[in-house]
Length: 516
Image (cartoon, rainbow, N blue to C red; front, side, top):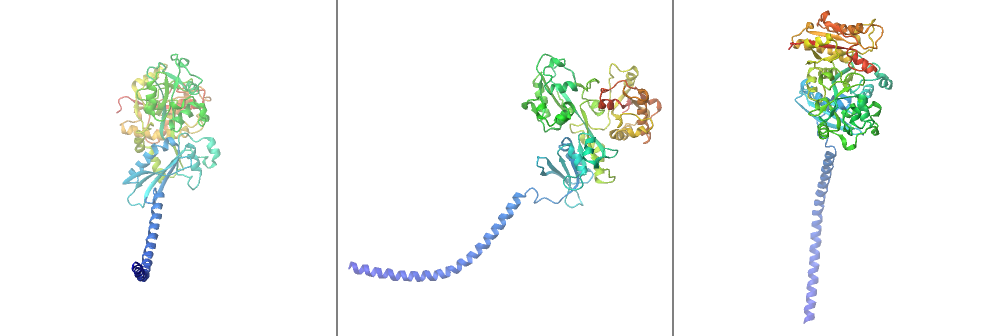
């Protein structure tokens, strides 16, 4: 019975298995058709997902520019980090807004060079113009200003070069195309920069010379007693090597040839400060500390008077910097190829005159707009000079000359340097704004004791007359009794160096007290 039942169960299972197989076969045939349909849809869905993935990856990797509006570079500026890091971006943004009518402005780093210097795009949305109008600023050093102006076309060319030093003969030798760069119309002074040497207010030292500073910052002088102070070691502080202030201090005090030499500095690495406020804080914490900052950043520290050596010492005041009497100051310059009526020319004019100078005032640099400064004459001044100082005040500008000698056979007005030529116009504007005339000012010429050919009084007087002639040409008449000179008296620098003699060959401008 058990076997029978077992046999019947096996037969039943066998028949059921056959039916199931047949059913599965039919189902498989129908399912295969369905699978083929689903497979086709999966294929298209997978392809679509792949396309979306590639698009998202592209958008991620190129996110910096893939969704930006079209950019049109209307001006490019290359050169000095001192100008390009802060001042020029501000001026470019203001120019886009004020002169080009941009309704919206902004900044974007477009790319970087292998050394990490940025191509900064200052952009503006200008109604009526397609895309973003861009002023490109590439700050990598003053030498780049001259390289870009000598290059025709390509990424390395530019419209305007930014420099914290004048073009020199070596630049012109390297780039023959620049032999006339620096002539009238191509060189523009944007601002002046001065560095203050600061110590703790408890330090009794009041003045130093540039040679003494050089000795301190190269470890040749290490004790304050060697420069008239107490018997205590000198704690040296300086700016980090990436700052424009470091570059200028090194150039003016240590020497141009040592800028790239890290070993020349006596400053410990933990005393290399990246911020002016921190520099002042460090000096204030130690009675024996010395450091340097841009002139407007002195705060509660004590600023030393500085001489160039055998010349007189000057404090880092706005007057001593804007007249260039202070030894550690420099001109900040733009160079271009003169193109009247161009956007480039409009930008330069905007920067050099009042709109741009208003922005310069908001930076650590010194603006060029003339101001009135009362003056206490030095004790060794002639009586006539002291009399002038009792009735007149200084206007914050001095006229300097591009030639060391006054050539009596040529028109001396052509020897005014590029800043002096613009200062002629600034002086006229100043008088008009204050309700003054040529009767209200004195032009006082100076020479140096090493000039030959003519007596120093004659040379000094010819200089003051040359400024009067330039003013007369634009409608400002200075009476002859207001054109004076003090010969080689009252030098502002040493007569032993070409730079010192250039500073001494000057014309000061004084304005009658009471002019509002």
